[in-house]
Length: 296
Image (cartoon, rainbow, N blue to C red):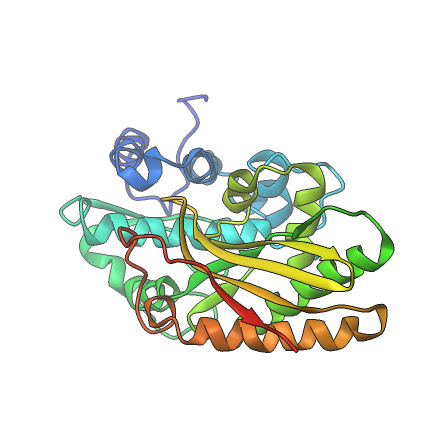
């Protein structure tokens, strides 16, 4: 980077102080464990101090930070917005803890990808796009209450049209069903499915969509009977926090009815899990045993 390039007039701190602050932020555990967060924040800070803040668009970040192809279409893929929200939450977490006494606050207002550099005691005064004097902390606290969940395409032994239809349709319905929970922010199933076609590494997929929990499953069909195992896993700890097995009769004629019934049972079963719905999950809890439910 050319150190002779003058800073934009609206930036009140020296380049040296800004990058020192950036390194303090990167020492936080959330940033140490996420290459994407570090690259995202580094890129938008670099572009801003170089006077190129006008280039910080969703497409540019997707291609240059998230390594998306040049035909990347932000309107069809919300991956940049997902990671931007993740970055805002991480910054809020840092300044609420380890960075509380830092002199410089680096924030990313909602509706923009251009970072703001302000005195730490002024961070509550930032005006966010589309809001009237909403503080970063107040707004991000609301965002942080949500749990990001992604449904991963279910595994199944056969690769015929009927079984594919059952698996794909069921995953789409479960994704839609999860949206009724206010504390769940659900990643679009089509986005997850497209990623799954490129890699079967569930951890990598979860990282790309910033999911904290994933719903996985497998389907077994034999002699007119089905077994469908569904689990919810906490990505950071790899712990299964919930699981059920659904069993019953299966025919080509009852595929839609079957999907509807399993979705209703799934939502009802998950709704009973107060650990995730009514309060944040305790990641040190022992893995729950998978129960069995017959679906008529």
